[in-house]
Length: 211
Image 1 (cartoon, one colour):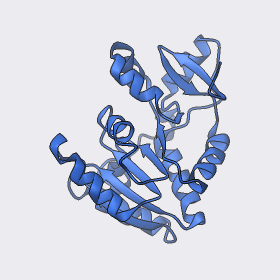
Image 2 (tube, one colour):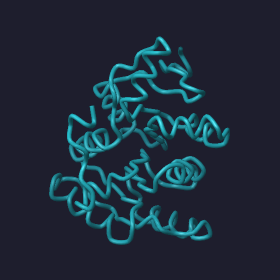
Image 3 (cartoon, one colour):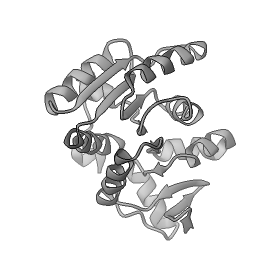
């Protein structure tokens, strides 16, 4: 179905974009050339089932500008619903593609999330992979609700083009959506445990298991 000009599929109330990596990257290039605040979420089957039971979480997901399916279970579900998604678009892989686009455009990224020290390690790994990408800053994700304004000020002081938020569902999605109008960024994206993978604290599953 078409929602706001976007081709989407409804799985238990969550509106997922029916796009592949190529189209998602084209969208990202457009987002990064603009000065709007775009939010990207990548729900997997577990997140969709949680949102099915919680209207507030469902509304948060559906307020995102792009909602990509992360997990083969979501792709299989789309086939059952008769609107097969083109492919599984994992949050980690799309994050890397996004950072490569940002490097080409000479943009900056801020990393928010993970345990103390993890975001800094992830930032160093990104800089080694993509030396042309500016690391605007980083901060751990272990802060209290009353500290959110302080975190927002830290991010805004750096004025990043991209904000990567790795605090797990639903904290990262709520942070991006609720504070969208307060934050300075072009694109914000929830990336779950990606910082742990980048920092070397956690290994990704082998490709055959991901499939």
